[in-house]
Amino acid sequence: MTSTGGGDGSWLRAVAGDGGRGPLFARGGQLVHGPRRLGELVHGRPPGVTGNQWSTAIREGYDLVVCAADTARPVFAVEIGPVAPAGSAEQRVERLKNAVAEAVGLPVLRIGSPTLRADEHGRQIVAYLLDARGYAALGAGEPDDADALPVGFRDILGRLPDGRTGHVNDLGALARSAAVQAYVSRRLVDPIVRGLHVRWSGGAAEGWSWVRVRQGACLVERVTVHEQRVSAGVDPGRLAEDLAAVAIGERMRAPDTAEPVLTPHDELLAEIRRLESRRGEMTGGFAFAYLCAD
Image (cartoon, rainbow, N blue to C red; front, side):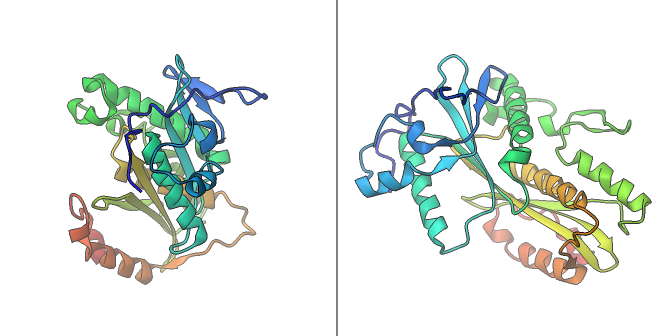
């Protein structure tokens, strides 16, 4: 399915706050709403979308919707959660929803993670995105022009919660601090949360994070970030890696009775080497070849 003229967003309508479903919070002149179905965000079926396609798509929803405070019209929608398995019915429905969102001009940011969830992490993530986009807009008026600023949002230095100086806009900072504490208490054999990120040509960015729980075994998380007609305000690869660190922190906070699923270090190393072998499919290449000799 291709866009047929609604890509300017003219099909989008103001998001109502009726029925006790007002905005979750306001930030930077924008309102953030909780879950909304696609059918609640558009005026009607755009040309080129069949009735069957439309009836399926409008029942699908988004975890959070960011709207302009003055018009209440959607600026972008956010999804957070597991990626649908390849070839599954869920993936086919997801593709249909993506195509309809493209046709009506609805920007969408998708965060794929087996651990992160909108209920627990959505507000923090969306607040971060709004701050990053607002900061980037100071450069030349648009979030995509972040490179015009002398220091990117993610690279701003300041005082961290533990008193150290570091990157205050690193979403994974708390997880990195927790790893140090876990190392001190001998729950980890290494205090460093390591990671990498790539950006696939014409597709999503992908970030990995891992920490050594015991000799030869790691806790590993992978997150994807897919920008569809919207900029996160920061490099999506670095965002994906930071979110993977957040997921590591969530799993480290699990009760001691819940034994985490660990990845053998040799297996992780082999996966990194396989990733490196696909550098031709990446935008900007692979900057983490040094990890292949870890």
